[in-house]
Length: 306
Image 1 (cartoon, rainbow, N blue to C red):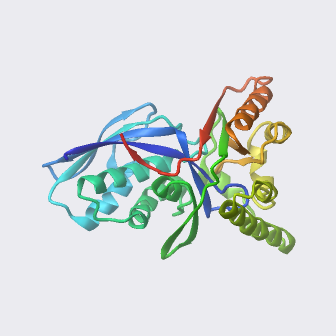
Image 2: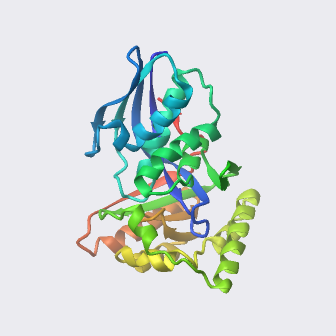
């Protein structure tokens, strides 16, 4: 095999209470990438379609992660990367992580899969750091592993795969405004009141138990963020209205996706997820802000070969 075409999925990070450690993978939204093995050594980005991104390998997240892997493995070949970008940069659903993960995943396939998923995530973190000024894996891990993941540690990197209840669906609304991850991190507090910290880690433990036991009521109770959301929601117009509408439409929970501006809701069953979508659309339809919505089953496979 000399080339491989892949679907590199969008992801939701933080999942309410799990800032920088929890994430899940989406099924209906993602980029397509084509990775080609060449005789000429080095890593080159030859095509970018959809959004304007840098072609310079060292300035593109897909290139940075690919170079980190390439320089370590030193293969007797080179690679060309084509990026068909469908996830808008700055959307809050893992645009940069889809690129960073996709390039190393495709190269690994063409080299005969010498690296495991944790090693691929480690290289992809180098590219993600270019976009957000910090190495974190809460989007990368679900993209590469699929389903729900917990990042137990980044040094050394340790990813825990979590089960996905069979009836769990995600609804997303993406207001067409841009929030840079680096900017949304800058407004976060350095100190957290002990009461809020206790609430937050109790919710994280409860959410993970709810996923393991398919306890939808417990998942509903746990999808509550008392640390990050109060700070970041000020960057997202009409956030409180969208959240109220989603909960009224029977969503289990509704929170900021990653650093925003996208907002996600989790629901039990596709019918409820579509009703939640209608409720979310109703809020932004009353504004002059353009938006897109999606309903997706949780993608338990992660990156897929097309």
